[in-house]
Image (cartoon, rainbow, N blue to C red; front, side):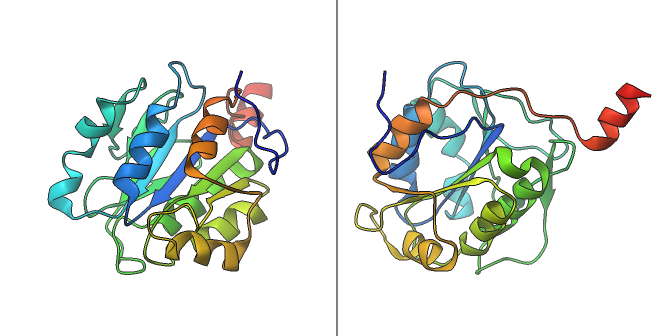
Length: 213
């Protein structure tokens, strides 16, 4: 059994994981996604800043190393546990209140589309305290505002230690703006994430009211 890093209290179960990365992110995500075990109990949504021509090959690249299916997210697609969803080129990746994908062509954020902040903010609104957000290596401040939204909603925030990141700007900016529940090396993030246990997401209030009526 993988031990929890000493600076991280045992993480709460989560219903979804959102990850943001920029420069250096292909290598970081390759390691992180490869650590996820078959049957991982939550959907994993990823925004990575890369040129569109390279993004077209990411699902195949990560899928070759990951025990989970890795797909390019599609609009209105229901989110399923044990699947990795990548933001497609030139679209923001969002989470709807009914736990489905929404793709947006709204203006770039921090000069990026897809951007990390819209994913984190929409996922925080949908999942609340049952969300885990992770900021990895990168060269912008994207993700900082979204991480604040996650923490405000009661979700968990992990940030790659800037000293461990290939490019420290983005994790350092996230820590300055939002703080974190854990500041970990990439290896520690991978090991701890792989050990998470999850439960089925709680239906939205309107669904609960419909069931009880």
